[in-house]
Length: 95
Image 1: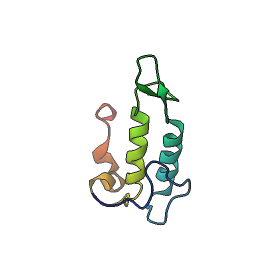
Image 2: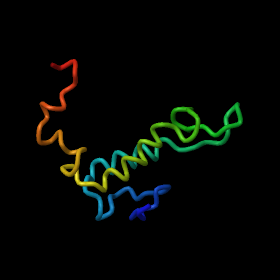
Image 3: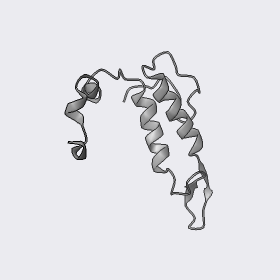
């Protein structure tokens, strides 16, 4: 696994210079900070302070993925294809 240019447990608020998508970075950091673990709940398992779901909650996991995704060029690879041809990626119910 490649080494990340940031600590995934405590990323900086401002995007590191390697970040290609600063807005995604800032949103991911905010989501990560909002969804932190809390001491064990009634069932004895840790829970999220924000949503009360079992830890790590889904928003926390999505935020961590967002931090890594912010390092990638939005125009590169399959994830950026919708920029070039948005009609191709229209939702099925929009047709």
